[in-house]
Image (tube, rainbow over the protein chains, first blue to last red):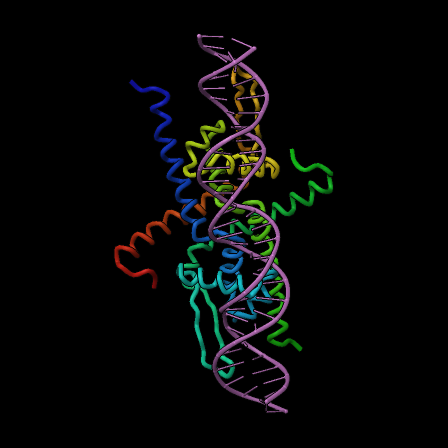
Length: 128
Length: 128
DNA sequence: GATATCGCTTTCCCGGAGGTAACTAATATC
DNA sequence: GATATTAGTTACCTCCGGGAAAGCGATATC
């Protein structure tokens, strides 16, 4: 005695589960800076002030907070070298490598999105 | 007369550009609900109250605001049918399909991340 | 036509994210 | 002891996400 309703239930549950996975990801990767920082540090390890210059728009306070978050969640490691004025190097852990595909797809999408927006402006219509 | 510095400049510029693409993507997809909503509506078009029930934790006000944002950015369409108490159906546009890969990778990552966290708790150590 | 209900929408409010600018601690140099 | 460098921290402020609850337009009921 299958009904349409019964057939929809598994699809619904599956959808709710998938959304939960996406929300789990967003929970640790929320905000404006997590993805940009992980991407940048995956290119090469950097010092605090180097990140400040490379990641445009970020401020010392926000950077310090984001780096703390990322370290707590196992994405980066903070290495202190007792040199003359102290050198602190931030580098990504292997766990950040698991984000490779996400970072790639996000970057690709952002690139085509920028192009689409530029075209919309040229054509003087926002969408459709 | 190449120096190490000169060789690093293109890589730096390339990195800054890629980060810009990622930031462009995050600009329209920021917050807790954009990805979950696009994913859910890509599964099937839904009415306002159906979304409220399906996307756990979202409130009417926040949902209305997010739906407005998503419509303005061309991700979804709001269709009104003049039935007895009025039916409003929200459905994704073809532009949302361009996010397919991003949504897939984000969901995959979130799933393995949840598993990793559960293991960390079992083993009583947070990372490393 | 007064009242109730459904399907959103708006108002009010709080807390936290994130920006600005100035300050600090440790060492080295002058 | 004044100044510079590195790696932040602190105080202050604004804006936005998001929760609670009321508002509102259209129909259904009496």
